[in-house]
Length: 253
Ligand SMILES: Nc1ncnc2c1ncn2[C@@H]1O[C@H](COP(=O)(O)OP(=O)(O)O)[C@@H](O)[C@H]1O
Ligand SMILES: [Mg+2]
Image (cartoon, helix red, strand yellow):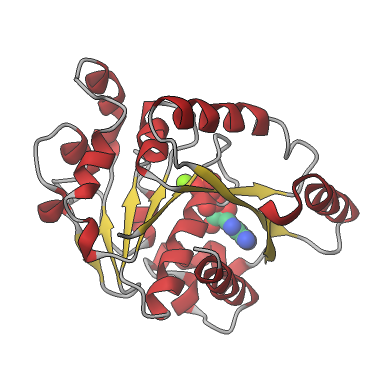
């Protein structure tokens, strides 16, 4: 069975999508069979994987609502070397429609089970909220990867996230564990960054990934070409960080 990792943080702009896309590409480069699920109506992971969300008619929304099988929704992200379940703004309405349905929290899990044997890793790029969509991501996952920026407010909201993980573990998914905290957009010249980074290590110990993702312009520009930075500029510091992260994930899957 595949390892299923949900990339979660209810804050926007902390590097969830960048992590989901580049970790998927790096794992694929390492020979793993990878499925990336875009679970955010913004569809950034879809566009960043080179698939046009505007012309995609069947998305994760259709899988959640039971309108299509994932096997017929997934597409090949050619450049990245992984499969993608796309998302677009259709998904924004799913929240409301899901509430009416049976097993509304485990619909993604059920849909993924039917394609699970095709993959070694399934990554889920969650939206910036602790909504029913994110709960679907957490219910389907074994492990949670939490990207965070090393800034003053980094820890704010972490307790809400941890509480949500505990609630999902108690009610829906007893095996759910936090895989690790990932420091993103790190600026080594910024003393506050350094301080927050050290605090994270002190408080969370080996739950903090050794790999630190630096602030790197290649990571920010790659999405506009629809190519993961890991391939767009393999020599860049940002790409190298995500290759190192993939090694860590493979070490402790
Ligand atoms: N390490 C990084 N260095 C520079 N820019 C980054 C880095 N990580 C992410 N970005 C940029 O920051 C913005 C937010 O990142 P994103 O991955 O979309 O966050 P989220 O999915 O958490 O909202 C995007 O424009 C992205 O390209
Ligand atoms: Mg995102």
